[in-house]
Image (cartoon, rainbow, N blue to C red; front, side, top):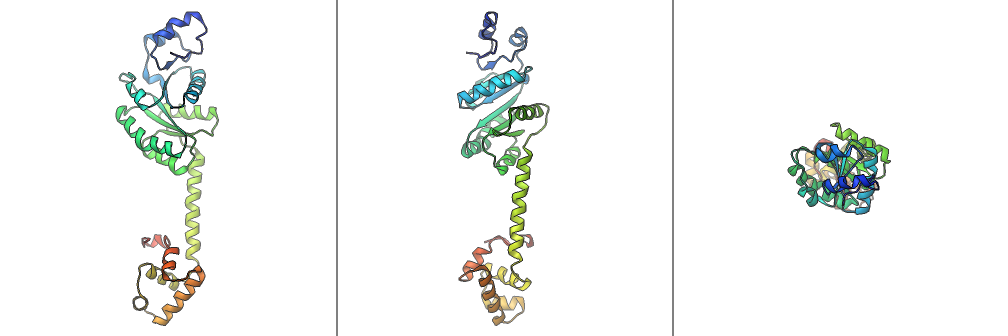
Length: 259
């Protein structure tokens, strides 16, 4: 049955019965909506949680008076709905990291094939910045974390409706901070060693014996042993294998791949 914020008014009952099953009347003139339902003026909510789906739908129904609000339990139900030749904003709701991953790598691609013109927005309680950026890379027009206020979420949806892309600034800041921290850590690790020790570390990671290291670096084999001993002491490593493992990922800017 169609939900309507005016369904307590008797003269609205005929309109409720006439509208498509998944449509929530947003309060526009009933005759206009029933006679000319336009999917381009709609916001579709896909959420398996009926309570959360209903709450979000009713909030949007009150706020977005120029839109019809459609609700679906899953992608299959959305696919069966007659969208005509138009497209809409589609809110894909997910709870948890795993469910959000499924939406990004399974549902989103499928839905874009069904309706290439629709604009999809992920709504999730997962606030992993990499996942947010991944959503945009996979074709989503927005990512709205459930921790933001409703008025911010509404503005994000309006931005997407206008053709923009929304992603929380905090996601970009966290992603940049994480990248800076990794770079800083690697720089700190590299600063542990002198230039010659760094060359020896690279050779150890390639599995080269002392004699070959001495030849390539033009130093005596005894000097190589001294460097290795000092490197192990700095890393608190017990052997060459541990040195190679503990320094994995260092010196990547110079083009040396980790093993």
